[in-house]
Length: 168
Image: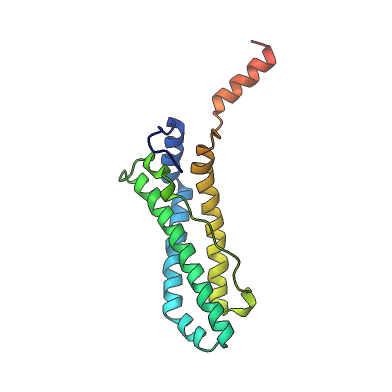
């Protein structure tokens, strides 16, 4: 669990703020929100039709996978909204380090993709790729920082090389 009384190192807060202001964040945020909207439209529209023509077993798999899909996307959207709050100054970068804002663990493996309607299968695959990217960002920015993995300082690294080369 994150100790909020422990100060976040200044470079970590800077990394978080820099990411929140980056083009990578903009693209990831846009992709995430568009995928949430597309999923909602599918599940409320074509997905309803798709699920009605499935066998009982396939319909059960469809229900389970649609729940996994929406849970995964809500986790990603929540994480992205925290980063946006940091960007807009509504939340301090240090506060974004709280464990409650970390990406949750994914649960279990799902139904085989080939047993599901194409629309749902496509959304599942795309959401999983997005989730994996966001999980990587979350680990780099927050989890590894908690474990004491510091970001290398480029000037310090060059200085250390010069010291090693010239023995000073």
